[in-house]
Picture 1 (spheres, rainbow, N blue to C red):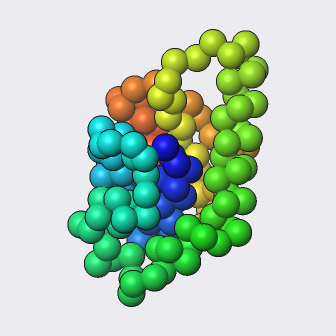
Picture 2: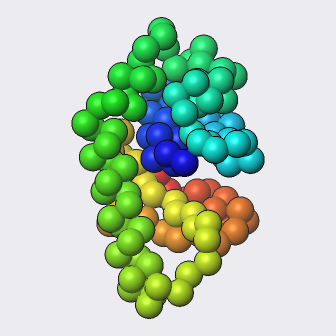
Picture 3: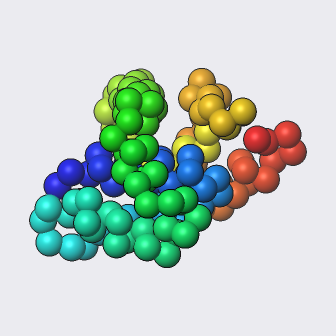
Length: 131
């Protein structure tokens, strides 16, 4: 169902409009309830219509999604998750959430912390010194 397109769009939404990635992710998550294929360029652009004004002029989102930098970042995140799951014998619940520090616009996956609930996510994010 081309879920990678959705993941890339969420990643790019945060890059183009820092702080709006969760809004984009929420809108994209709703596409899981649509008919297959669930993630198409048109569906993604329609889902992100509410945050489109902060993503910049038309074409920026698509350029980011199609770019090598976004694909490399997503691949690094997928490798991290796979290693994390393997380290736990493959027995983890889904979906999983992680709080990942961002310093100078770069994700620091080596400092990522798993969060199993919204409360835990807020606690990790609100911890003094958290970035």
